[in-house]
Amino acid sequence: MITYSNLSDVKKRIEDEFTHRNAECDKYDYLIAITCGAIAGIMDIFLVGNPKDGYLGKKVDKTVEKMTQKFAQLCGWDKQKALDKNKDLTKSAIAFLENKFKINYDQTTTNGRNGTNGKVDNLSMKNHHLKSIGHSPDIFGLFVSIVNQFTNTSTFVSNGKIITIDTNTFELQGENFIAKIFCGFFNWFGHLASDWCGSSGGKERGAGIPMPFYNLFLLCDFGNFGQHRQTLAQIATQVFEQGYDLRHGVTMSIPVMINEMLIRFMYIIKAKFYHKKEWKECIPKDDIPELNKMLLIGSGTFLLIDTGGAWIKSKNPITNPVVFLSEINLINVIRFSTLILKEIYILYNNGKIDNKKLEKYLDDTCKILLIEAHNKSKPFKEILK
Image (cartoon, rainbow, N blue to C red; front, top):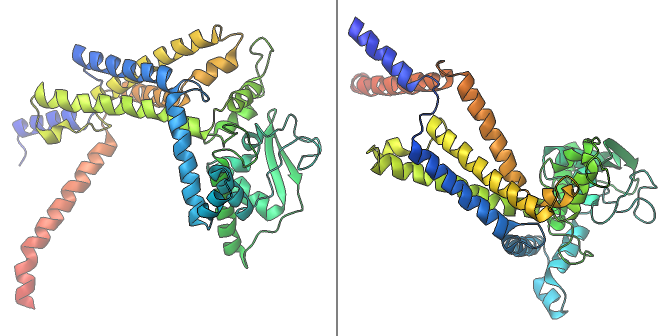
């Protein structure tokens, strides 16, 4: 039977454990978050920088090239043969993959050979991986790629429009519908593997494939930015042409992950040695308001420093937005945005019951009770046998 004292205890436990609450950070939490964010921001400025000159970017590019060679070897590429002929190993591997995973939506120019008959404006070797939706490493890219392969078409996004052209030069392998779907998927994946470190005929670093969903910016054909009065879609295209591709996305994610890990690590250390909590209570779970606030402040500090560095390098972001955006860490911008939305959600629901947490607790409790009941009933079952 529940007494008034029991009821007050239950109410207090619900308020403490199953209610949304605001963060109660102290000065050390703020200091940790700002310091970690500053470290990540400085790392981004000096080690990531722009796609062509960054120290970490060059390391990532080399790793990507080795991964491409490994994948090509798994698919049958003869590395030793390429070495014997003194060929560039990466370009040889790319050429092999391009030939093995052929697709019909690889047009590279507006007019001329392998072109679009003037239907896609300003299409070139530098941007065709961006404008061709099938080259996007996300769910939209996969869907469009398979549709293009089934229907002998090629789909592009340019100047705010989605443009589809007929190719009539391709036959998707597979004896039935399911087999064709599998062949279409492997063609898409294999071709992306050949393109993500440039093409076999590309010079220097080469144009890779875009980051997931980046080509959605090409639908934003509005605005009037910079000294050349360009739209957002045009600026996004030029930023990609500077090397702002998937490889650079991987590079940008490094300081973002370091910032995240540093803050979570320092949260554990502070919880254990400053607040004297048990180790199991020090786990940096995502539903801890103080940790979320620290991550938000750290990411915001990172963004401020990164923006300042990009501003200095571009001299004037208003008249030179391409250079400015090429220096900005988009991965951190996305992370900061998600943390802001999470903080708004916490503030809006402050004082309300967290139904998900309560349901999980009740489910776990029911499972424990069922297991205990099952274990207690074992002797009777054995007697009946």
